Image 1 (cartoon, helix red, strand yellow):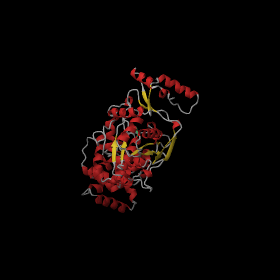
Image 2: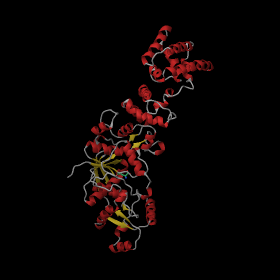
Image 3: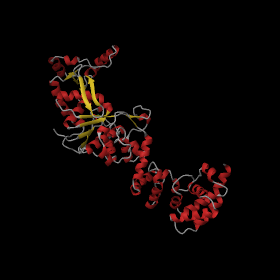
Image 4: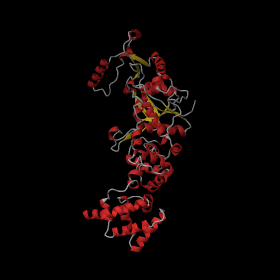
Length: 490
Ligand code: GLU
């Protein structure tokens, strides 16, 4: 037997990559890389009613963005293509013919109307589940031939044997059993000639030599149908691993209504790909310790399906935000610079020309205090323009009777400065503090308020150094004219 690990991410192109899909893709990718295997992208596009223009390209772009490169798939043939199910119709047909011959599948010519009546009748009888009654399975060879010849609309159904146990072992969920009485004679080929998900999925997983089927828990109830098919076809079962559901914080199933679900949305909101991938990895997996910060390489080293939990995983955006901050701090200032410039290009300061040293100094001053790269702009607009207002709460609290006098002393000292070095800023501030025999805060709070308009920000020396001598002088003069008046009104 060939032991090569081959896994696949098999999305139906709906127009975007769902974060749940990202989790499935990531776990497949990690498992493949961990085991020197292949990660395959297969596009399950057999539902023609759901065709969305450009969906596949978007999906591939999103996977690229998060660095989940596939080894085989669209435009990357590994000898098992095509990787679009819509291009494999003859393959599905060939295999279905064999099943029909062996009576493991059969043609069904029932009209939608008959099926509707059947369903309603079963509901009236309060049967737990509507099921097809196998009427067409009992047609004679002649009847079948005659109906086929007359070109009646038809589907092909799976012939499920009553009251048998279908069992399989799931790496995440353990031993799973279903009774076939609860399984419908599933349609395998639709009236438009296209295969259903079940049929195409099983045929492809077999022909593409998929060793492990790793997918969301919502597919668990489909698996017994697949197992029946594998058995009918005499094909070896792949190993199954069904990943836990993703939940909203209120424990309902993660849905669009309660927040963003598309990977693109998170990208547009300014999340780092490293943070999103790290966050998604933890939705159902941990290494067994409480480490939460991971880069892709370390995840590859540590990932195993045995450590995936059964319990639903809560999608907690606060945790994602926290991780985003950690991943920003993990990057060097130079690595952050291009990301910062991208944000600047989208901002109201897009047309200003800032030199790299100025931007790098903002990164270094603010890095410990941001959650998003765009916070280098919006949490510290005072680096880009003089404040137009002063935080009233801070004015009330920090502007004292001696503040104006202290600021005037400071202003004189600034005018005498020879350099814009941090050390020189430190020196003049300390001289004033000592001369007036006051605490450092007594001076620094009004200075900060005057130059930035707010009460929080990076260290005072850095703040002043980045804003620079000339600009500091202007801002102090303006503040001396405005803040005392404002204070009186409060
Ligand atoms: N096409 C299915 C989906 O959209 C694939 C499920 C599976 O992995 O078997 O998720």
